[in-house]
Amino acid sequence: RNRRALVLQAEGDRQAAITRAEGEKQAAVTRAEGEKQSAILAAEGSAQARLRNAEAEAEAIARVSQAMLNHGNPAQYLITKSYIESLKEMVRGNNSKVIFMPVETSTMLSSVGMIKEMFAETGEQRTTQTEQTPPRPRQLPT
Image (cartoon, rainbow, N blue to C red; front, side):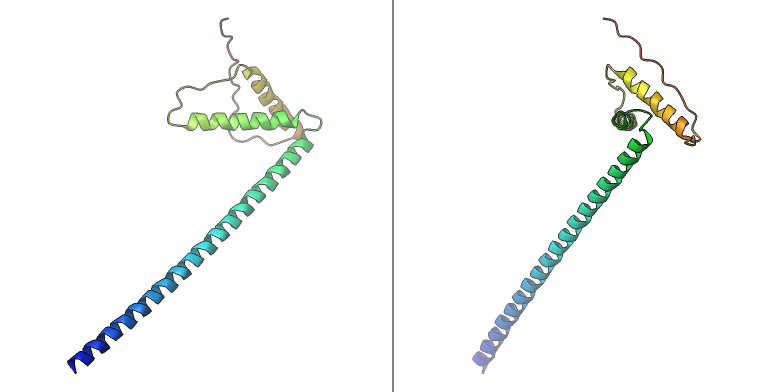
């Protein structure tokens, strides 16, 4: 009897281990499928976001180009805008003690003046911030 009970106990333990392993395997497969689906959805969402950003940027460029047909070069406007935004980011940094300015700073400043004129001609409302004219760049010794 004792031997038979041991055999039955061993068989029950073996079957329980098999069932447990199959359950763990199924759980791992289900978890992996969920992670795969999650990664696919995240990638699709990211792609849609990039596409919408590109479409919005194209629309903004088209509008700027249309507004500037008689007022200047839209490419120069976009470059100047990007340049000014980059300067803002450099100044915001914790280690922004030195700012390197290109030699052609006067060109950038004249572009800022062109943008101001364009807004004045199109009747754009001013913001509540006071406008400050940057100082003229000084001539470096040669």
